[in-house]
Length: 502
Image (cartoon, rainbow, N blue to C red; front, side, top):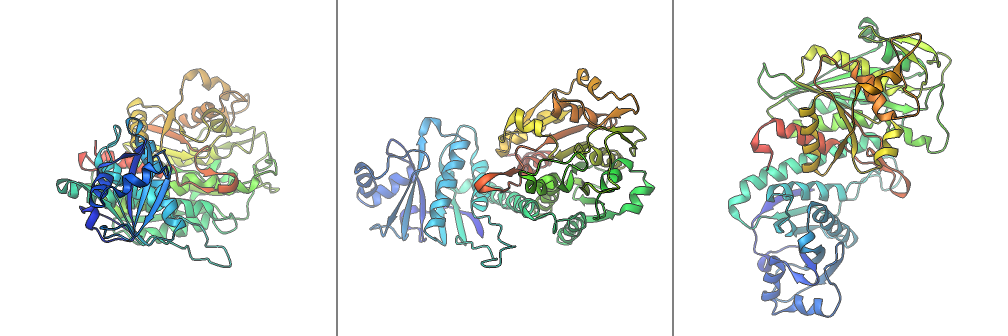
């Protein structure tokens, strides 16, 4: 799909469809007024007949309107003008995409980015529109025997820029939106693959394949022997129960200056999580293929920065294995030694994500990162606490935490900070090892982060618990690609004002 920006005149613009906003109640936007004037009040008359009043999410398709060069006009309800925020704006774009798909329209010009929102600059609206359009046409049909090729009906979308002076920034914004969307789709594709295909080796080969597209990117894959030599006892203890060999995937992107310290992204890559000996209930266990969505978000974000050739250094680290209940698997009560030398009593084998992450976090120290962010579908407690809207955020550095919170707000991929107080550390006490891998039934998300914090004392570190946001269940089951938008925006912000659109 080709998404671009252009300054157009709506009445004379040739297209299969013009996408135009209408505010509640029947209030014409500037573009709608321009079209109404060119058609001698045709749009006003249609609205007065009661076919549409501009409520959020409403759409009305008009055909062969006289004096208009386009074949159709799609009117999109935007709700009350005073309440038109980025949330309503995104809903309007999504509603337009839904109608365009329904009518199999192949090209369209969107005038919605010209609408003023209090919480988004024009370039931000362009970027968000590109992301939302791509997302609306995403399909995962690779494994269906029929119609295996995704059907993309919209081949060309133009986002209108009313003021030509904003075109240069709009071109950058749409490029950023396209790149973020590609990163999100990459993460979604990996997350949606089943565990018998998307194994640790598959993740490694995908990372290598992706890196070949970008001259500033290289990949190193550590196998079990390599991890043995590094004494990654925590990670390897989880892998023992599986026939699939573990992998530690290291993706280095060097787009910045040679001496610039990198940002490290560490993504949990459990390609299937049965719970191990502490086996999970059978209901919805198929969704445990999504337990590698942290890894998928790292691979997706690396694609985004590679597409844009960002002037920054980033290292992506993905510890990956399966968690299965084999005879060699971890048992409750086992004690393992991490790469850091700290010992861990495994009281619950279903708290395995933190075991693979702790060794990956220790491994990240060699890159001398200026910040480390780990991303993991780590705790069901986070879903209970925050639901499916924000991811959980905990950090040992408030500046880093605030930067991530701000990036989440601007990218519409929000996070919510939870406390990382020393008060919770006592819950990890063990009579037999330096720590236990669980902290009991209370504050599970926080105690999981407290566990990880013991391996990040030398680092400026933040933890994103994405258990509630990484995938949808039910009728719309599938990976969401989050938090690729948040991570991408954070990295954009590290590249200077050019990419921030504040």
